[in-house]
Image (cartoon, rainbow, N blue to C red):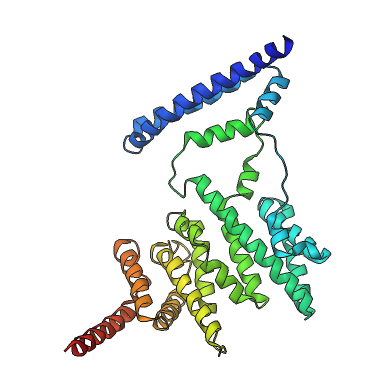
Length: 374
């Protein structure tokens, strides 16, 4: 009987919370659409959400802490550390030096940039990377490649998650995000992440670290690895188009930096299979990141790319397009024309020369096909 009473006592606030939550989220979705049009409704919506959080916290204060702990455990909110799949998949755990470098790079992601520890840990990581590279031992170079590649992929996933959590730059305050905050903070009796922790996990910080990891990969001679991974980050590329300006700035820098690397990749390749693979990688880079280059913000006070850098990158893009097959050129140039035309805030990159060449070739192929029919 005692267990049944205890269960009923525990379930009562849980059912009330879930009921109120469902009603408010349903109402919030309707109000959210109107709030974007009417400033007064946006203020009313904010007051409703704030009042709800206040009364929810006041309501929970009447229940003993062990009941709240039971609620948190029953809903799966208990934190359970998990083993990173990156270690197992990449073979990082095979050596102490690899595990140490991995721990440092993970810590760089996790430590807030405002902390004095951030600079210390990042400096240690840089010294370890440079030391491995300076030894000119293939085994140590392979450690750098595996760890940096795994950290690069992990950071891409973290940025994607941060952009989704932020609403990809929409600036909308979503009620379901409030409930996640309540879940992690109020139910445990405290807010688990303070302002500095949220800054440490922000998309802007992680995007800047992606640029840093890219430079480290290329500096160690693994530019092809970096290009392939960046070309495959299609989800991040889609999110980046509507991300905040400073986040976009880092992505534009990474893309520009790696497009420069593609200029020299594969020049010495003679085998048909390798050349074809590299051509496909360049194609993926264009399809994945050309929309961001067309729509991305180039900065206000300080440009993300200088005029000379933009002109250089335009030439690199044109050369990369010229290396593609005719049908692939059509796909890339059609994508460019769409984003170039419908983005009012930018007139770069201007690939009209590549488009004109493609049209000339297409016209010749058309005339040739007519002659063959006759």
